[in-house]
Amino acid sequence: MNQRSKSTLFLIEQLIVVAVFAICAAACISIMVAAYFNANESRSISNALVRAESAAEVFKATSGDVDSIADILGSDVSWVMSIDSEHTTITVHYDSQWQTINIWELIDFRSIYFSPDDISAGQAATSYILTIVIDTPQQVTSDFSLTTGQVYVARTGEDEPLVSLALAARN
Image 1 (tube, rainbow, N blue to C red):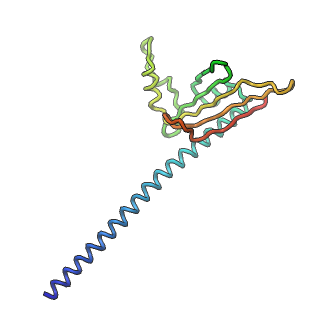
Image 2: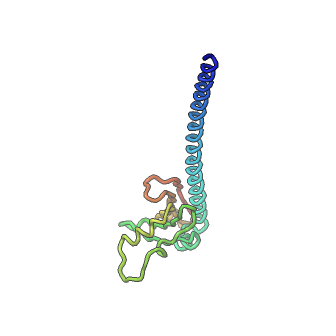
């Protein structure tokens, strides 16, 4: 009977060791999953910052010229004029791998009429949107004018941008 009680205690000890190991393994896995999601978030913010800085440099190099900015960034230009015509907006759509998407290429134009649902289907492939809002140039002195604006990079469907930068260029 003494031999049997020793083996029972050994089995109980082994079960406790296996249970502690399982709890530690579960904790490690949850930490690894959290680290994976944090790395993806950091990668998205880093890519957004690079795209926003590039757009800001293009804005500065072109002195805020809308056509030149759109050509260099390779975007589909969305001319969105506010009611008082003080702003022009350029949008660039990116997929989840940060490759530029032209949403107009995704829309089926075989029919003459297309609905907002067609545009929504084209935007479904978009993961990130870079938006440049350009203000109307202001004449500072007789020698030069100043063009200002903002660049935002956000995930599709989110109101809060990942990155936001102020823009200014002397003409």
